[in-house]
Amino acid sequence: MALDIKVLSSGALEPPLNELLPEFERSSEHRVAITYGTGAALTSRIQKDEAADVAILLGQQIEDLQKQGKIVVGSRHDIAKVGVGVGVRKGAPKPDITSVDTFKRTLLAAKSIAYGDPADGGASDVYIVELFDRLGIAAEIRSKTKIFPTTLLAMQAVAKGEVEIGFRQASVIVAAQDLDFVGPLPASIQKYTLCSAGLVASSKQQDAGKALIQFISSPVAETIIKAKGLEPPR
Image 1 (cartoon, rainbow, N blue to C red):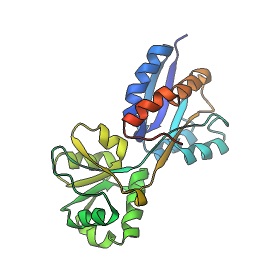
Image 2: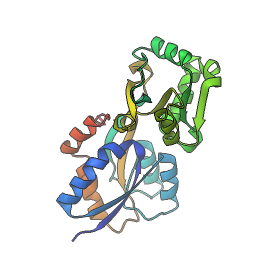
Image 3: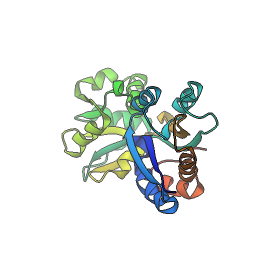
Image 4: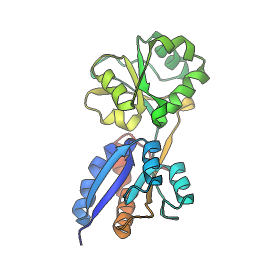
């Protein structure tokens, strides 16, 4: 019997899920309705018992929700990990970020830099603030840093040419039609976000939800996930 499955997911998984969910719907005949957002915002919605069947959040958020009885214990499956990336307007020159030194020089030379408000809970935004402090350049770039209410708005400003350089999870930049992906942060300062799926404890469609989680964590799904700028969770 075809069922409706409601999913709450981190925006980092949107690019691969846009391809995976139609495949799941064709093979299972179930229908999937998905809402994307920051992990912090979606966690709050689940804590408030919003109706949903599957949650795809940070691994630690799934763990915490299991302890709170909001996610079925043992239902967690790690889906992918994604790093922070750098984006510029489509067709704009790509700066050198291949090492920590060139990354710092690029930011110091940039006319403007954008990211989302860390208070919105975006993992990449929270990390970027920490990183600038750790690299000792926060004060020097503060006057040209533009913080937008959300990461989406920050990257839209980059796409319009209003800001030179933007930061977001790499998978989202890779998928954007109006941005060029400069590359991931240098390996020694990269931070990966682990995205995991779990079955919402209050779900009325638990079997269908389990089937969806198994599908998006399968070897076939892993191929698509890697093609969209994410990495396997292992």
